[in-house]
Amino acid sequence: MIVTETTPARIARIGFLGLWLVITIFPLYWIIVTSFKAPGDIFSYPLQYWPAEFSFENYVQLFEKADFGTYVVNSLVVSTAAATVATLISLLSAYVLARFEFRSKSAILMAFLVTQMIPTFIALGPLYLLMVDLGLVDDRFGLMLVYVAVCIPFCTIMLRGFFANIPDALEEAAMIDGCSRIGALFRVIVPVMKPGIVAAFIFNFVNCWNELFLSVTLMNKDENKTIPTALNGFITSFNIDWGSMSAAAVLTILPTMLLFAFASRYIVQGLTAGAVKG
Amino acid sequence: MTTVEERPPTRAGAPAPATPAPAPRRRRAFTTRRGLVVAAFMLPAAIFVGVFIYYPMLAGSQMAFRHWNLSNLTDTSWIGLQNFATIFADPAFGVILGNSVLWVVASIVPQLVIGFALALWLRRKFRFRGLYQALIFFPWAISGFLIGILFRWMFNGEFGVVNDLLMKTGLIDQGIPWLAQPDTAMFAVIIANIWYGVTFFAIMILAALQSVPDELFEAAALDGAGKVRTLFQITIPYISTTLALTVLLRVIWIFNFPDIIWAMTGGGPANQTHIITTWMITFTQKGDYGVASALGLIVVGLLLVFSAFYLMALRGKKEVSS
Image (cartoon, rainbow over all chains, first blue to last red; front, side, top):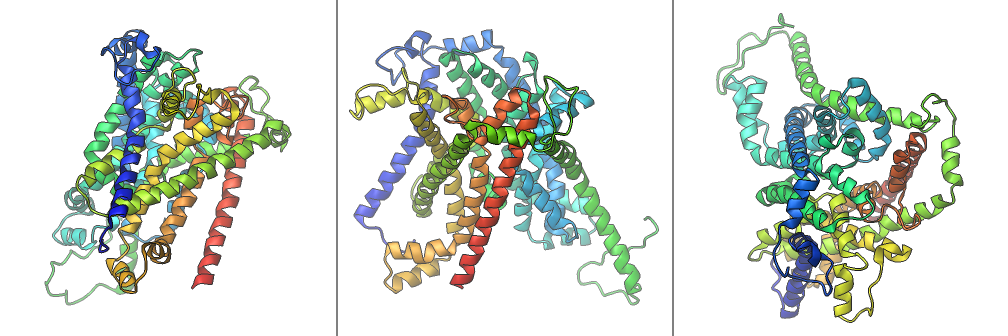
């Protein structure tokens, strides 16, 4: 910016940014600290802002009592598979929507946008019945199919934004040089779009990893639950075991945080390119 | 299709073929081929979205007009508007509608203001800006449900850190059972939602700000415009479209966002933190999909009306100003 900053303005800026950073970080700090407290210390008074002794007891309980490992595996398998398939399919549809003019184009885009605005709960009942008919209730493959469908609309819109930033001339040149359209797409465009594709994949993964209500509806047996479903089970039981709950929260946040730290720049870019839903 | 003859692609700079193919036929062949590519590339996405999103949504919509309860599936007869009548007759409905509006407005206004301030200040380059952005953007990567759990623990009446901090700073004398009393419970869930949603506004506004040409600010500075004037007469008008659309999308999204409330209070105490979508979940859990679907349609209707008015107001404003 051109305007030089006065001292009060500088103090105001640093103060505000600093305060917001503290506000943002604190809840996370608090849940991490809680997860490492010995079970007795969690409910001790005065509150300990730093654990008197670091204990892994909560984590051990989580894996011994709650079979948390199974939930982690379920979440990992379903989220990774769904995010991969959804990204591939969206890549094709986004390419067509970015590069071609055809009659139903605006209708398709509108149909995708509308899915972002209607509460999913309206679909839960019929979806459950549909999955019963397909024999896919309590099946990780079934949940994956549904997640793919849920990811596609936003992912398509997001990737379409990235395609718009790549000049047509690039694939035209490749096709003139003898590439097929598919060849041009995968050999020339995809490498250039890598940041966008990574962002789209991570976005899909995080969405599936965090999804609650669909998996609650479709996964009934304990061995099929994903992490959010399991947490939902913890919370509806009358007394919440805050130690295990904190440990579970930390383990749930960790993978998405790592991914996010790795690719936050691309995700911000992708969000603003797609600009529909947080 | 295989009989369609296609001209071999010419290398750039190569002389044009002497006899071009007859124009109408080439044109038709060209569009059919393109049509096939479009269809083939769109098909997988269309199938997934059609089968797993649109079909259940439409099927769900007609459930709103049927008796549809998991407890008695032999009777799924058409009952017209009876599910809607059940909803409107429930004294809780008025309260819950009011809560929904409060939830949206009280969440979105602070999100917009704080997000705008963050974006304005993040526009200036400073050391560790990248790291700072990554840190304050992190709430986005956490599920709303988990954020609800985080804040439920912090607002815990006995061992909550919020009470502890407020007592340490002398603002209150004794702990407040935040989530157990109606007024404070609503306040607490809204605080959690503000915390979560600021990031999205900051990202969108920052991106919009980066599209404002520097020359505009230079011109404003030359004309002697102060900071506040520059903000209201240049920056905000320039990004008004992005701002307006972001607000519209967020209103829709927050209205449909039960996760935080679900994890923090489950709608309690005594329905006082229910919004329409959390209420809808309770009906789903009771197996009463008829009433739940009717509520879903009410949500869609409200949002459609709101969007239409909002967009009309925007357009009216633009016409006046131009």
